[in-house]
Amino acid sequence: MYNYDTDSEISKIYKRIEEIKYIQTMSNCPYQNNFYEHMIEIEMEKVRRLNNINNYGYGVYTGGHVQAYSEQAREFTLDELSKYDGKNDRDAYVAVDGIVYDVTYNQAWAGGSHFGLIAGKDLTKQLESCHNKQDILSKLTRVGVLRL
Amino acid sequence: MSDKKYVLESMIQKAAQGNVQKPNLIWLEAQGCSGNIISMMNADNPDIIFVLKNMVNMTYSNSLMFAEGQSAYDSFLKTLDTDFILVVEGAVSLRSEGRYNIIAKNGEKSVTGMEAIKAAGEKAKHVLAVGTCAYSGGISAASPNPSGSIGVGAFLKRKVINIPGCPIHPDWVIGTLAHLVLYGEPELDNEQRPIMFYGSTIHDNCTRRSYFDKKIFAKSLGDKECMFRLGCRGPITRSDCPIRKWNSYVNWPVGDNSPCIGCAHRNFPDGMEPFIN
Image (cartoon, rainbow over all chains, first blue to last red; front, top):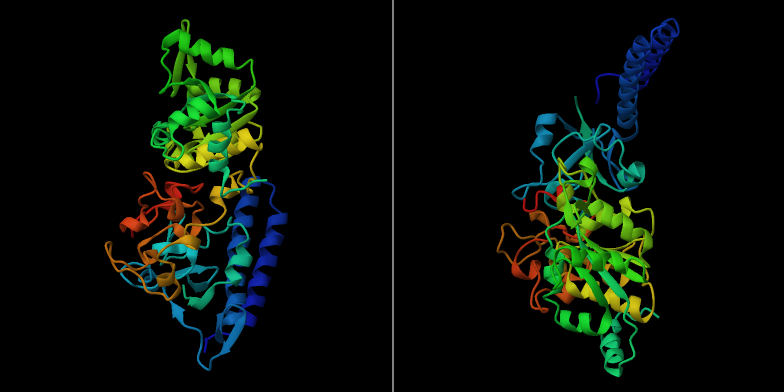
């Protein structure tokens, strides 16, 4: 089990975001504004990851079906994830928005590489501008979550 | 109307009857390697002599025409005032006003590929972008793209028929020209490629597909199983290489134990790397 309650964590983060927004309204300088905007984005990213753990943390998804597991979802550190690069008969895993997906047999990931990206990494930023991102991600096999 | 099985045979038959209206054709070699016109010379059924005698009236081609220098370029200029098909191979190089790609000299003035493509592209009845460089920049536009190359379709603000490949299979170009001459424009997909050649992926027709379906993969080059785990780009590349095969229909990369490198894909080569994992 996780050692914190994700719901209360999320409400704490939303409180922080309200505080940052309040400070932001009081700043006159556009550079300061940008700085606070960026801080809010970092907090929102945390909310997204916690939401994912909330929704999928008690089981492992395959496509649209939840497999009921009594244990928690498998956690990966970045180090562990880097071993799953698709080379030498190893599987290919990719992390996006905190969830780790298995792309070993995905047709666009032959040999563990996809349009210049290599598996075994957190590709959240690189896939931000990906077309149909949510559609594509919802069809991939999930194998766990990324622990930072 | 687009009878893909018979467009080449129908062309040969119609030519034998002797009543083909041959359109003028300009073949421009822009920022590329001229690999496509060389591949065209390997055409087998029909061959390049048939194309030149019976299908089109090629009035300008850097590689094939007898004329040189000013008289060659004059032939290009004369064709602009007629009905013609423009074929471009190689990308459009934009950097420094196109001076990375000088294709001719008109009097004292150098003519850039960019100018010639613009002038001819505006007036041509049909424009064919032959080869991956002309389609989407290809190798000419590979990072860091020092010549500022882009595809012909992105450069000309008009409809362009794309025939990607690195190089193309001669049948793809000859078949498209035959369709244009006999029936008009062929059916194109959403990337403006003729469906008769690019309608299915290599993966759909691969001889090793049953290995993929049963997840039996080659562990190293030279193994006879599916090369997906080695980085084969067959699943995302559209063309008919497994069926048509190359060099007078004898073989193709997978048939010769090499994974497909996706040479007809929009993002070739940077997006298809590493070719072998």
